[in-house]
Length: 77
Image (cartoon, rainbow, N blue to C red; front, side, top):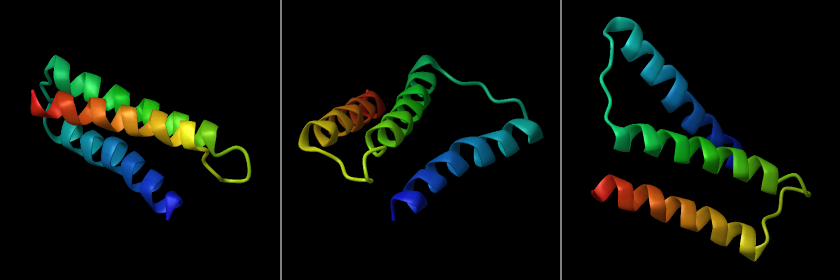
């Protein structure tokens, strides 16, 4: 399940954006760029946190939830 989540995020970023940019150059604004970097950060943190027997502690989960909330708030604005 975690592999599917990480794999779909990576494919959505690299595959879909890469194909779209290949077909026609993309123009992005600052919020989209920040959102992508936060998503990359969430994936990197998840992989770092999961280094110990693929179990998350409460504080690690809280950090990931905070990153998710930041992405959500950026998308609203």
